[in-house]
Length: 453
Ligand SMILES: *Cc1c(COP(=O)(O)O)cnc(C)c1O
Image 1: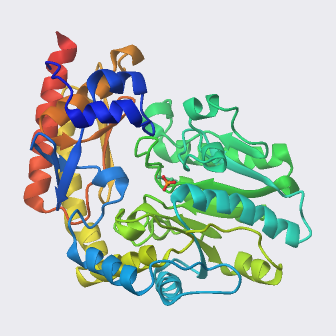
Image 2 (image 1 turned 45 degrees about the vertical axis):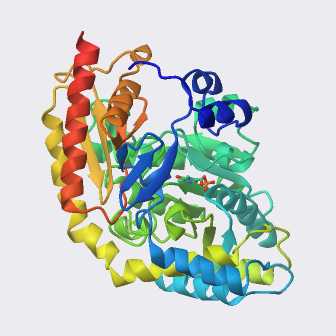
Image 3 (image 1 turned 60 degrees about the vertical axis):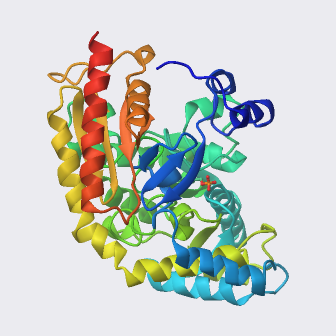
């Protein structure tokens, strides 16, 4: 693609703005992609190009762009009470209403929530909360948390430590002490000839091995995403989660589900814990809770930990913007729209199966080694040779090539290595799914031409 001169905005941006998760040198060379406007599942860039956003922003714009209900809710709350905090024995109506509403949607015995401003803050909260809980039980030595390689739990010190992203750990000496990792249940990449069932059990039993290696009375909790999102939409074999839950119960380890992506209808359930038959002790949510219109996170707390915390005196933890009233008002409006439009059932019974069927048709493409998905999450694996699913050398950058072709064709699809992933708004229509698949196929064709020449 010919390199165009940078616009004044791109020049300003390069001069003053350091971007998250961005190679700044490459950005300064090219100029940032400028997104100006959104409506439904579409974005418009500064050149007027219409782009189908198959990632719902960063997995969050579940109701799509431009929802007047959410705008109204924010506006009304800004006028009435734009800010107050929840510290020192205080609440405001929207925080209390949202906590009570979430309790009706959450799995099992989760009746309490602790508000934060983001997914990362949820996971920082989890680390402090589970350690505080065990200390209050007279077991302060139960402080190690087990997570997984290639997990994503956010970008703060605790979030990045719980996460298992090697490049993140390499910058700044992470993980923090007391956080250890086991292998991920990534069948396509690491299944090594076992059946999916066997592989799922084997990866789950690494948790048991790790618990025994550390000593069961040293372990506070296990944390995992039901489906790893940023790691590449990794859907574990069905044998995996039940075995993890069994092991957590056997050794009295708290089970923490990070549902920052999977929550709020993404998998066709309010929470993916329901899909996998899990009753976690703690559950993290953010992203879809407000459809990304405004930052908010919450940690749901099951009865056991809640009882401990309530008895345990003051928990010296919280954020200025924990349960911000405008964010809570938007979350309440977001949930109300989801209920009115029956979006969770729609993902489960209608648009989810439709998308999965169409997405699976891409598996016939010569570059595609596997397609997989659940609800409105999906992934495909780019391979150099379909006969044995041999992958491209890393320095080929097949995923990035495909992603750039998608952009040129007006489609946002994300690349994780050579795994292409999507997570479109829950409101996407059938014709829009068809357009997504058509463009994805065109992008695969162009990627094929680029790579085979
Ligand atoms: C995005 C994400 C986070 C971090 O959320 P932020 O709001 O970016 O801090 C944590 N966990 C999971 C599973 C995520 O996908």
